[in-house]
Image 1 (cartoon, protein in one colour):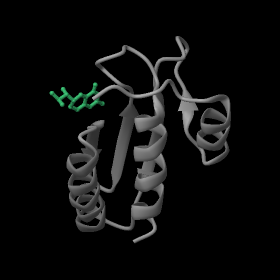
Image 2 (cartoon, protein in one colour):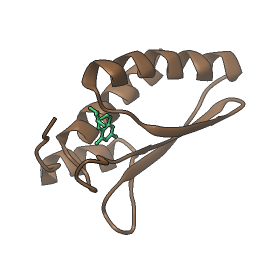
Image 3 (cartoon, protein in one colour):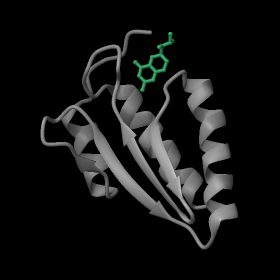
Image 4 (spheres, helix red, strand yellow):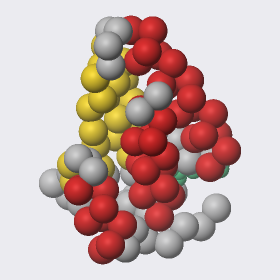
Length: 96
Ligand SMILES: C[C@H](O)[C@H](O)[C@H]1CNC2=NC(N)=NC(=O)C2=N1
C-alpha cells in the first residue's frame, strides 16, 4: 500500500495531540497511561483491530497500565498519512 508522506498539517496536528517527533523525523511516539492493566490491554485490543483495518501497525509495548507507542511507515522508512491516521484513531480509542 503506497501512502503519501505525512503533511506538515498532519505533523502539526499529531504534535498538538501530544505525539513526539523522533530526532530523525521518521517516527512519532506517545505514552498512554490508563487506570489499570485491564484498561490498558483493552485499549490495545481496540487499537489492534483498527491497525488491522488500516493495514498499518504500531510498534508498542505495555508495562502494567502504560502503553508506549511508536508509529512509522516501515515500507517508506518515514512518516506517512497512515501514521497520522492511526495516531488520531489511537487517541480517539484511548478515550474509551
Ligand atoms: C505486507 C503488509 O501490507 C505491509 O508490510 C504493511 C503492514 N503494516 C505496516 N505497518 C507499518 N507501520 N508500516 C508499514 O510499512 C506496514 N506495511
